[in-house]
Length: 291
Ligand SMILES: [Fe+2]
Image (cartoon, rainbow, N blue to C red; front, top):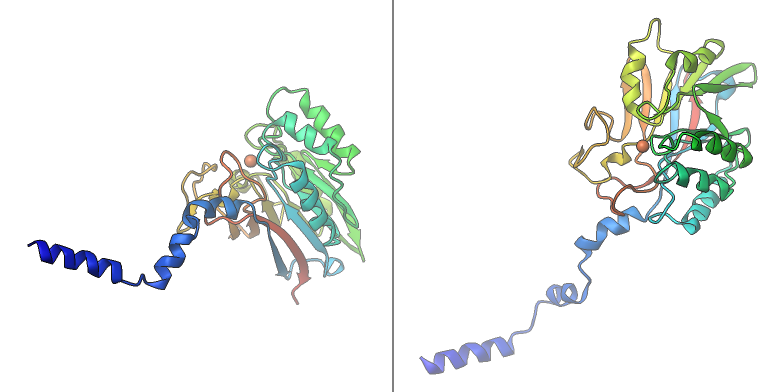
């Protein structure tokens, strides 16, 4: 028995390790760190939005849409400055900030008081998210003021109407559906004077409420955030969904009741600084008139 044991040990000593095993042994445990890496990225998603309903005057109009920055311990001032630089380089006609600027309303006020300085040829629009509408209530007015002082136009049950080459396009948004004072009738009012309306609610959960309103739908395109694409998603399903509709509005493009809907993965993170299957996104959408 003894000689056989010695032979086995000798065999082990003489064995040359497979090269891949050697390489992997020297690498850090990437599967563990990958969600941290994914959360730290920002992917520019460039899309052409073709629709026969796009007014001729807005053919080629460029929108930059970003949401859920969540400025704070997990997304610091330096990353905000990098983000703003990247957005401003796109020279958009309209920049749309989709809400959830920080962890809470104090942070949202602080975010705009940094004077991030988003720039657009026509307008920078700012939507209210659920985190932005957290108490105390007096932060609401402070936040509106901070947005305006940074050059952004807050859209809270309100909108703007743009005219271009004889066509009119409205950008409207309600207050946050869960934490704000959401008034859809007031939000919809401006769309009556527009040839095309872009609805900008922070969260897609409000969309089914608009389907219950009288008359035809007041918008043709909706841009939403909030879901973070699940933040950690497996096979198209969020591990933990922030929507009452589960994964119905998880991420990407949808078409419901005659409207086109984009739900972004957002920029920052909430809770833990990790993402999986839900890369951070910044959108550049060029509107194209389909003949
Ligand atoms: Fe949110």
